[in-house]
Image (cartoon, rainbow, N blue to C red; front, top):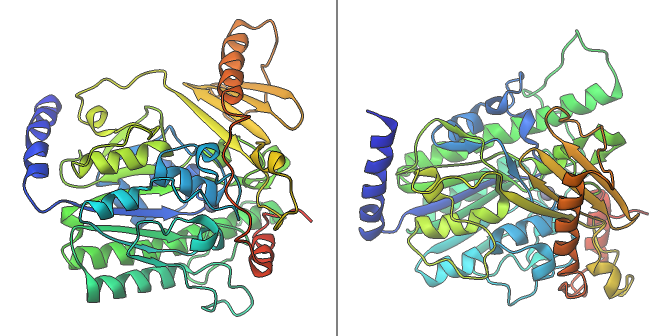
Amino acid sequence: MKRSLIIALLCLLLPLIQAGKPKPNLILISVDTLRQDHLGIYGYPRNTSPNIDRLLSRGVWFTNAHSNVPLTNPSFCSMMTSRYPHEIGATRNGIPMVRDALTLAEILKKNGYTTVAFLSNWPLKAHLSNLDQGFDIYDDNFSKKRWLFFNDERDARGVTEQATNWLKNHLKEPLFLWAHYSEPHAPYISHKGFRFSDPRLPDTEEQRRIDAYDSEIAYADHYIGELLSALDQLGVLKTSLVFFVADHGESLGEHGYVGHGRYLYEPSMRIPFGLSGPGILRGVRIDAQVELLDLAPTFLAYAGIPIPSQMRGRNLLPYIWGEKPWEEPYLIYFETYPGAVRGKGMEKLASLKKPIWVGLKVGELKVLYSVLNSRWEMYQLQPDPGELHNLADPVNQVFIQFSEKLLKWWRGWKDTAVVGSTSALTEQDRKKLEALGYINK
Ligand SMILES: [Zn+2]
């Protein structure tokens, strides 16, 4: 059958799917700190991700997919509201978004969904993020489990076990399930049975770091596979739209930096992003530019629920189905902040509002502005994917055009940025965020 005919049929069928009750189940599987180029489906030579690859290949997956902010709490608050961090107050780890920010889970709950989340990362604890808004179950109680010497994360086995136990005993449809895995977040641990090494490569600290990071991905991937098997056995998978994303990537030494949050370069910003389910084409790679802001509107549209006007992202379904041409080039904006707030009253409000970098990407062009150092950078990702040759030049017309666009965007909100309260942060939280590398001593 011709592809155009398949698309036409899908366009005809989806309104019927949406009109016919029950509503589809919606599943979000996210992995923290997972850079796109370490997954097999995106061309990585190591077999780090057989289950994620299989999941993504059941639907459409995007190569030019980006996070809007490379920090965990800001990224998830932004993703769940389809708003920029500066609009909802979640500018750092440790600062929850404001309570009146409308979340995907709240909208789904109002529309009859059972909403459940299984978390694994300290910055996403309810009192530090307010991401529990709209969830019937927000399981962030992982501080005493596993890893005797380190308990800032719930491990992948724990996420899958908790989610699977709940599904087996309490499943009620329509369901919105969010399962979040945190393995690739530092510190990187090499997991028995999921180890990688290559005797042809020199035994350096950098290579050992990459080997351990890959081991973390493979370990999470294994338990994501188990969760998908459980969903399949329970008959949930075949009636679900499944989104797979990361909140941001990870710099593994690029630009002299290991971690995420400090810069807006591709290792931290480019993420895996794909969706699969009834009505979604299978096995299609899409190179059009998308961003995490697009996730919530797409979920809502698939469920036949109106998208609130304040949501910034796009419903991707008409583009995926060929009803609308992808807007190319499409412009997306980024912002980033110091990793975590230090504690109650330790930083001034103005500093909590202030990003360290803002940036934009349009096609293969990236323009970055260091708010901290008043410095400009511009890169053409082809032929410079490593962002090594700064093309920022005050007489370059492209630079003039897009630097003005970026400044206009940032100046449009820099004085009105919203900041949530820092009062939720306890001494224990501060220690946990420090252990995760978010607070500079
Ligand atoms: Zn994260």
